[in-house]
Amino acid sequence: MVFPMLVLEGRAFIQGSFKQCAIGIEDGVISSIKKTLHGDDNVDYGEFLILPGGIDLHVHFREPGLTHKEDFRTGTTSAAMGGITTVFDMPNTMPPTTTLREYEQKVEMAGRKACVDFGLYAALSKPRETSRLAGAGAPFKLYMAQTTGGLDVPADDVPGLLKDLPPVYPPVVVHAENPAKFKATDARTLREHDLARPVEAESSSIDLLKAMRRNFHITHVTSEESLESVSSSGFTSDVTPHHLLLDCTRPLGQLGKVNPPLRQPSEREAVWNAFAGGRIDILASDHAPHTEEEKSVNFADAPSGLPGVETMIPLMLRKVRSSDLQLDRLINAVAERPAELMGLNKGFIEVGRDADLVVVDSHSVTKVRGKKLHSKCGWTAFEGWEAIFPLAVYLRGNLIVDKGEVAEDSIGEHVDAKVPAKRPEPAKKPGFGAALQQGAPR
Ligand code: DOR
Ligand code: ZN
Image 1 (cartoon, rainbow, N blue to C red):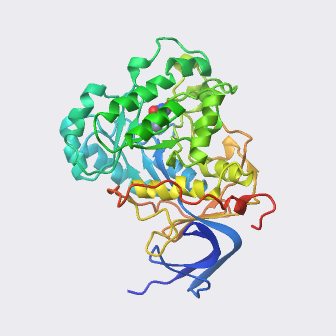
Image 2 (cartoon, rainbow, N blue to C red):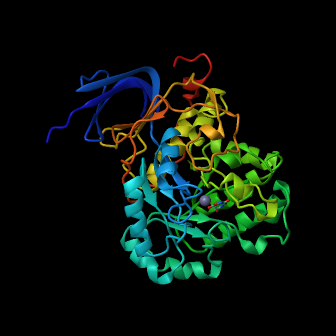
């Protein structure tokens, strides 16, 4: 069968560096990359950057059951506007995703509404359902401590749950906090929340997992101590933009309440350095919207979590522009390594991969405004911060964001996580930060 060829021209990130080139796309897949190509339709982005679409392995889109906070349409629209073309959604909904039936219903619901491609986690929590969910290829999330949704599992029960998973399987994503290390206080400030769920709770939980001899992926790491546990165990890890950019001294009150908590400035800086240096594999938003009303009660009663899927890449592109982060490290953390970890045919601008592409004008710096973002929750902890939002976004060759506006919606498809072909390696070559820096050509 012959498909029409769409050609995108620009400075694309190919095999570790930027090249002025033409990307040919047929039937949603990159079919050729050449200096010039004549397609049925050519779109010339000049010297704008073309990056692989972002893959966010940690979002909470709240559907089913909590759709006053977010739903699959608003969540995935928000993702697309921030340059994310694939999301993996968490299971702590109402009802939670703990059975094959709930999983299949959610795949069907999301397939009708999603604007970007999506994977869905099932909670590792019910012994009899684990093998059935694994049979359907569901990736798993494990909660080691109480947080929104109450899906936590006592550490002693985890080996019994893992027994029903095939020995070779995509990594189980873990919220690692050990409740035995929590302090019984009614925290009223971000610093008290940090002390109530301390760094040791996180590192000790990772240590408990080591004995289980599984390929765990530790999500939202917040401390140097935890990173040492991660590296001695051979696990992979991710970090959120809020743990990289915010700390518990910020005047955010309960808007900044999140689990695991925002830490002290020195800890934040250590985690930033680890991320920028490639010791943390992946950047994931942990987009966890709650309404302003829900967040406006006193600190102890406010729910934990903050939104972030739309601002994650734009805030980091701004950090690249100010030379605080290398662009190739960012691409590695938001596209290449998530694709490798979950075995997706995405994440790289390469012949044969899905044509998920993000076009960026590096001079287009704007201010983040909560009211202008597309999440239902309508607020952000990054109000007024500078950011670089994408100009255009393509999902499998379809233009879904054009000139910063939604161009097409509801074409997202379900993706299966697969056992990765190889374990992600650390970022190979530093460099290429210059592409976004002041004075550099666009
Ligand atoms: O702060 C958090 N909020 N941490 C979690 O683990 C869950 C999340 C949510 O769903 O709101
Ligand atoms: Zn989460």
